[in-house]
Image (cartoon, rainbow, N blue to C red; front, top):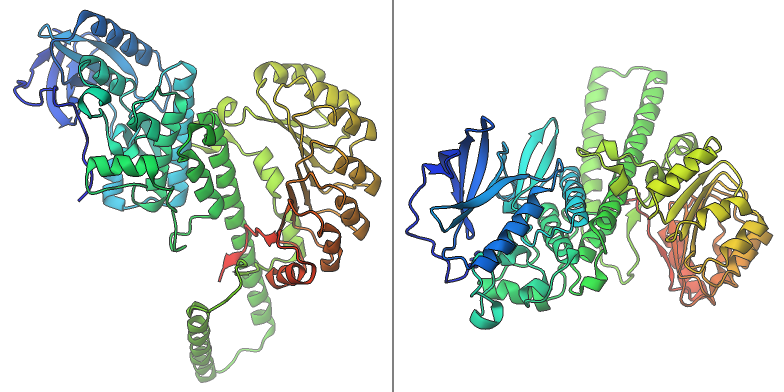
Length: 581
């Protein structure tokens, strides 16, 4: 038994005759549905000669001051023009006391209906829908409009090719319902307008809301998209509300059976933090995190495909060189191999008892030449295209990233400064970072991170970077990094995160890291020449988390050896691209 939608007792839900015409302009075609806040009809707009959707809100005898506020909210909602938002076209009152909203008529069903049929959506579809809603909501928030009732039944879904297109319904309606029922408040009646299914803790407790309440609600929607069930569902509405307010955030994939990567689960769980301060600050930030997860998932699939291609190529080569066997021998060989496979599968799938808390994973073996063709994570993140999504809005999704190359002109740099003032990350590819470039980047008030690919950085540039208090992250990809330069970097008091990918890294480099006790994270990805014994230099970095991903020669057993030999409990495998055993 699940929770149901809560509506004020003061709202009359019966006794409203089915209208045939509204405001002398809209001729009702049919009733589409009814919810806790009103009824929805399709109607013909005689002025524009088009089909529209009309929501007639429950509530009568509206005081003049509340009616004025209703008009202000409806007018604000009507200004939202975005592909992911069902636009409010008109609003008013008919029969002297019955408020209504006129909206675009969208083909398709609700996300709630889709989830009821499918249970949960494929991960790519779920991510696409989350991104689209993030982008639409960012547009609304930039117009100072909150939704306050984001939930699956307020999202229209339609099929477009192999994907889904999402449209957000009922902007401002939750607020409008509050307005048409002024006598109803939490403190006076103990009731709340809206659905507990996706209600933020602060909304449930009657606090003043901001955009982070909508972020929480979208987190609930995202949780259900990925897991097939809402994060909280009590036996009653009040029990569900209490769970939102007091229960810890549940795991999306507690048994690991759904295949939801930990980084994607963590991205959604952050949106569900009890305190607004612990959530994303904006929908754009949420969208960026989800886009990053999508890039990781795509890259993991790419690696898997490359591995399969390797296997097929090797099998084809061996087969072409091998003399053909007689048919009976082929059949018996197949039977033997099948038996071996079944025994091996049984052994692999049989649960193993282990006292170790390390991650169990089987390395994906990829030929060296295939690896060189693989896009590194930094490249994927820097070049993730918004147009790959159903709705393109790179100014929202990628507003925090700037990519500079040798061909970037001074005029283009000035344009970037004007169009992306919120940028916090710079991707520098194939040209040196000098003092002049640092002067340019320092004009961005939120600049905090560098991604360097096949380039160098001068001591003078580092000296200037060390004076930018907010700057504290560098990612190196295929860079020739002198030990002296690394020592200068580790001496920067605000440096928090260093990442190294596909580049030489010697014992002297590891020794240079030993002085960086201020570092929070050191990451090694796709590194081929790390020596396990060199990690002894990191034994004094008690507060630094060391992550290794897909580093040749350092499998999980080697990492466990490092942990035991040197007492480095902070060294772990975060191998995003390994296959789970």
